[in-house]
Length: 204
Image 1 (tube, rainbow, N blue to C red):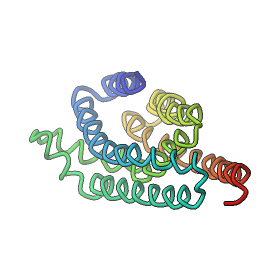
Image 2: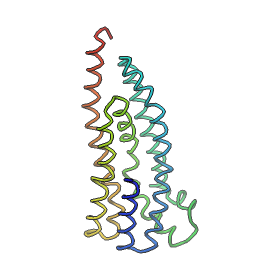
Image 3: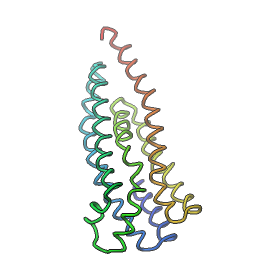
Image 4: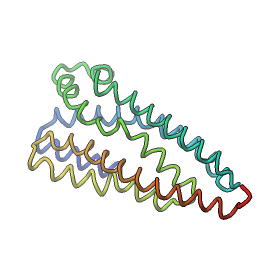
């Protein structure tokens, strides 16, 4: 439902401030977004039961080690995949269209749109970790923060000052704010979770 609401908001704004060509570019951008985020989400979902099991078993060191590796792998993945979109957007764009105008526009806006996604691996890893640590409500809030609380308002407000490019810039701004907030929140919550393990398992 959140994805649908974001899509409606972005496409409505692009149609208003740009036109059909801009709506077409967003279709490509969202497809590329899935190509970048789905592999990372698959990794986190595979690791989630490992963290949950060791957290429940009171294995503090394995929880810490698994978390560090997951964040590193996820961040590396989004840096590499988004890096292609930023530095060689024609590679992705060429997969979806051979229309010259659409190619030029999408290659122009893609580096801007995916700047924030380059560090999205951090949020994806942290968001999954909250679920693994039994904090599903926090994970849900983080998901809503990026899309509903930040992205949609930015996509509505920024075009009034920046024109159609404000819609594309809304994504990286929302991503950077959400990732920063998530990382800070996770730092404190993860420390509390580790202390709880120590309290429940003093021998470990």
